Image (cartoon, rainbow, N blue to C red):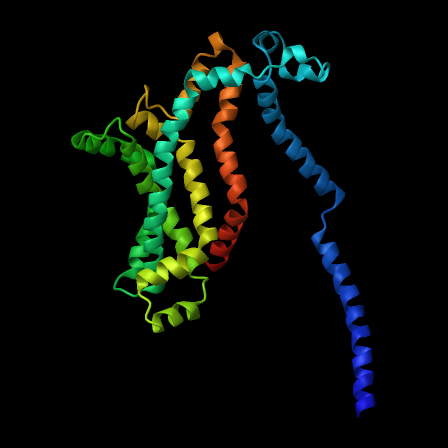
Length: 308
């Protein structure tokens, strides 16, 4: 019996390796893209990056060089340092972009942090608590995703006028909070539904309250979903022009997008090299946020999509 068992064990690895080679070949062929697909993807990436490269090159050129020739002419003389300068960034930063960055941060930070807290509490209730009308209420929250912000501008403007909020940062981030909450509740609720309920039930049996379970278990485990919603909300608020223009207006409290629009209006006097520098400064913060949270961003979207 021992010899027979030993023979079976000796034969089994050989069969496993043979199956692995067959399966590996099929799997590897299934996961690889052909040369045509790779060429098309590379071509699309190059086409996508050409405008960005033009903005970067233009922002580093002097005014005379930018006004006398196109940015692509640097290919013929890339080592001609006389046509390059970093003064465009200093010019636009000292010309109003520095103050606009502070204004955008004053609007964006509350518009990201507050919805995360509210949406987290709501998602926890929809996932781990039972109360009458839970399904209907969640359906209403999800339905609010289709409501555009433009339909509420006039009522909000009148309401803010009665409350004397027009021209304040609160008028902007409160509007973003209201219209960002449905997405936050949906993402966090779908992710929390993937968490093992045994952990939650064990904590409840040990005497933990809902508040303790939420802060010590659910929110730390929901970091990917929180990061995904934070990226969405940050990009939406930072890149917004309409709401900031309606409720803040031009002046000392203008945001980055409004300051960038002012640079475009002055392009004839200051040159497109200054506009390009201002554009790169405006997108630097969103790019940094996305790069830092990219790993959690992808995990949060995938987990929520699979469960939902």
